[in-house]
Image 1 (cartoon, rainbow, N blue to C red):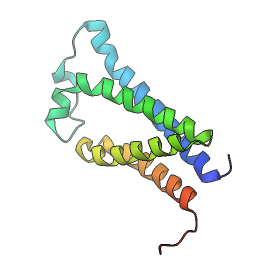
Image 2 (cartoon, rainbow, N blue to C red):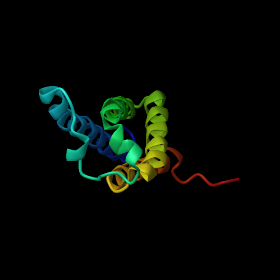
Image 3 (cartoon, one colour):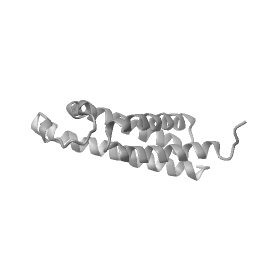
Image 4 (cartoon, rainbow, N blue to C red):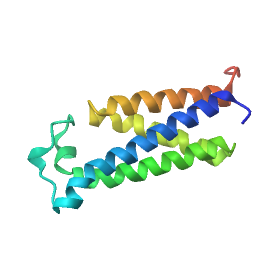
Length: 130
């Protein structure tokens, strides 16, 4: 690993991906054990009711995003461009989606934005705009 910023960004993304996978797994447990998810038992954690009403579809999507985030971070750690591109795409998508998932999306935004800043400053360094 040549650039320390890449390593820090990759660690942030691995932690973020692990949180997404673990959090989704914990939220899916009542569905697995009871066979159904009681929507009335879910606290109002999303700004938009659409997400709350469709949380059973949101949970697997979160797992997919978490896995993609960990794969991208692994690519960054082993110095691959595909890992860098996948990580940048993941961070940008998270920045767009976090707006609809307030207040839960605040942590997503903090982690994704900090990783994106580290990735871009690590890649472009001190280059100037011509």
